[in-house]
Length: 132
Image (cartoon, rainbow, N blue to C red):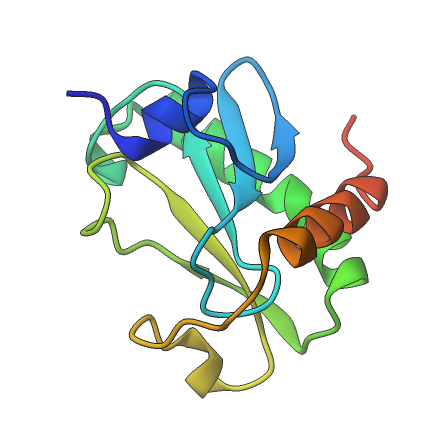
């Protein structure tokens, strides 16, 4: 059965996309723990990040890194944290988290944000992207 992320890739479930290539997709987490919480995934459905072959793993991390400058420009923070948990969705993914303190990285707490706010935030991040 396809993961929720595969359904997002296929367009079966809407998302607030940040960036997309042939291999990867970055989108805002629908249930974020911080404002600007981005998920970065390979489009191929592989459950565990460390099961990605070396090339795909490296390209995923480079793609994730390419999102960071736009995220920092859009969401003021001390730094962008990176987290790989991989327990909630059986599809390899990386979390990019705007952080101002360690408590911002608490995955047990979600912030309240509307779909309209997510759409506006995604638009702002996209406008600050400089992918080459």
